[in-house]
Length: 277
Length: 313
Image 1 (tube, rainbow over the protein chains, first blue to last red):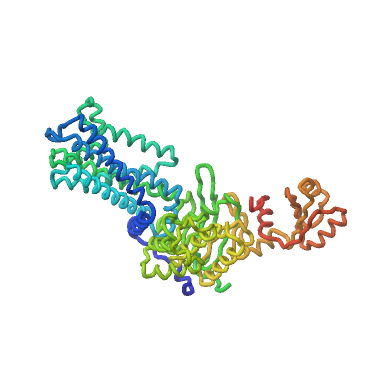
Image 2 (image 1 turned 90 degrees about the vertical axis):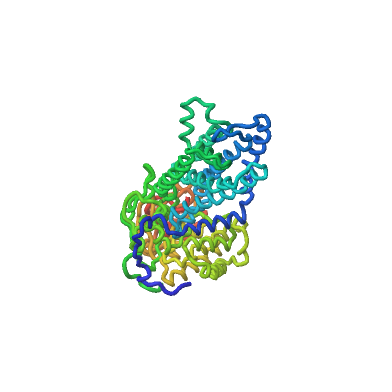
């Protein structure tokens, strides 16, 4: 195999770089692996994930929209019901994709496919794996958002070039959810606990001003929903989609920037618990 | 064996412990492994061997104790230490979503190795594992033995200085085991340090310069295979079978023959330096075993002596 090893070959210096225990600056290897695996086996799952919000948009936007007529947009302007719910569905799909990738997917690869077990026996650190997986989740989210925006355009719901900004904005939303999701997964040990994630996500999807304005709720409930991340995502994308901004747009964006920072911090602190049990 | 090991130990464990709640998987074990040695952890399932391996690889955090690999703490310098480690886990954890050759290439990328190095290296290792004609096959289409060989080939992609092998030949047929032993022997000759766990005594005897017998997270004995047998067993063993009904009752009538008597459910073992002489004594007492066998003492006997239990359960 190789030349004869001597005692000198067995001496290591020990890097002083911060995070040297957790990170080897090689997340790109994890990303390359993900792309190769997607290409060869699970593209079908990818495609099915794209259709879900499209089906909602067609059935509710066109079907229910015929009954509803027009509704009031961010600044009181009248817009079609389909145009009202389309950006909300995009925000939901960004959330679902990011949460699925950072929780169920990570949980499965950790405990059943034993994929990370193999990775972590190499030079890769847990932070390389986390960054790589989050990047892949965001890439997938960006592809879905692009496809969904194309469907919106076909349905005549894209009326301004500004609306194209919903694509990067959904990636920001996905990043917020993905960074948190991975941190939360580090606390999970069983499938039963994982089910709680769905238990939180479904009501958030239904009640975050997705299908009707927040004003139908009593004041206390409105505050509660405004504290949750999805409502900020829905409002942000809704304003961008018709280029009708209110000062709150800045707040919505900042909500996600803070969520990303806190989520990444949580995930980094929990990396040992997540990967090195 | 080639060189006499020199320099500081490449692996040093002191009072190494790993607890899961109240359960002490590893309970204060200490050992040093010099460069180039082939070091074995022998013990039954659940003895704490795999947990020890995982701590050496830096993928499991120890509860207490000290551990250095090539002078570094694997918890503080995980990626750096593992760059020089090759790991064959007990259960194959190949990437089922990738094809055979891609498994090697992608794994090499995890070490940050360039493709210009990896392409010829992957082909060389496929040759080594006799999987060249399976290069583009899917992993789940491989047989158990092929998967094992691929896992072992994969562990060599970074030309490791320390190779961790957790039950490397479990599930392999005898021929495949001997081929693997030959390959491991050659790696050892080139100066690679081998750490292996096994519950096969013949494997331990073949491959290990030195080993520790582990049971319930503790080290029961330490030494070379020959030394352990010398210290804890007799030269020969006489195995007698009287039928499962009578093995224990007949044991009383065998008292005094050989140095020590071990009645097991399926057979009675008599430890004696001269097995044939012991057998003559048995027949002279008028006892007629269904079968009798005289053999050399093995590590199995050492383990039985130290723990009162047999290795393979």
